[in-house]
Image (spheres, rainbow, N blue to C red):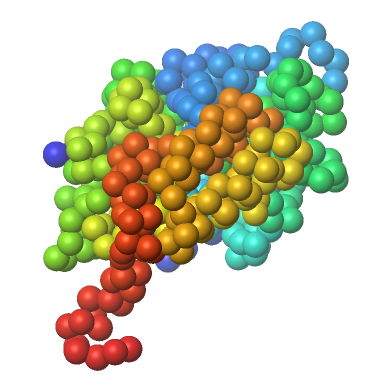
Length: 439
């Protein structure tokens, strides 16, 4: 069985893991000192050789993205860290920033030096106040220790880092909407091209990377490309957080090589909750097509998950057992996307609204079998026709759930409502049954 590879989570058992002293006790900031003795171009090449791919969902090669910055543009360059984590079921960046914020700060310093930027921003979702406070403290401590600011470690490299709190819009997880929000505008996606590498923040060359992507850079500097590629698969190198939630015995963050399977992860997590069996699960969060029991042995890497009909996404593995109504679960997700659509484009604004109406109608037992074709028709008008990936992502659970559980949708029609006892899927359901109480 594949074993866990704690790198970013290696010091989480330390009570002071979030402090500068605790981070340095485990070798923190050694990578920054080593990186500042290298040429910026050499760092970019090293990250390219490592095969590090974006950990925010898209999986784009990180070093290649850094290399897209135009060499002849006289404007300042910016690094922006996307920490606006807010998709249902996705929770890896927030615990990382809470338990080990200095890994991100060190990664920001190295990445900024590599792309020749003297100004970096960390855009954090505004609701996670505890994370914002911890990040700002980490940044302040790094300034005080000479690890940020002017003449870092006596090398002549200057870097200012700003921790910016967003206003709580899911759409700001889309990189260009994030940039608009950072500039003070309403968060809405921009038309591309131009891409951020050419005209991003303040119309200047900009790199936008996910928290986990940037936090992985110090390890690559210290361990080298061969160390990183020794984990994972040939095309999906390295390790990552797999967030297990839902009907699993021990939910949590499992840092493991890409290519591990859900079966292996469930073995580590104690399996599905006692007395139940797996029904369906998401390999990359609620915006990816759902998988079923037949996909238990699908390697969780970008290529294998894609070949099986879904996306690795943020590796948010939401686990659902047989007590869960798939129509109800999908309806909850689409209600979220309808609420969070920025409204800029008609397909997403109207499509998600009408999918909520149809799914609610089916759940109440007022729908017809024709509603299934109506849902698929709406998805067809959304997929590839919306301004950004929010619309595409919203079609994923709808289309895949109808593909795998069409009869369950029909049961809602034929039985005049949802055939499931929703209380049975709750965490306290088994405890209530065992005690004989009605709590």
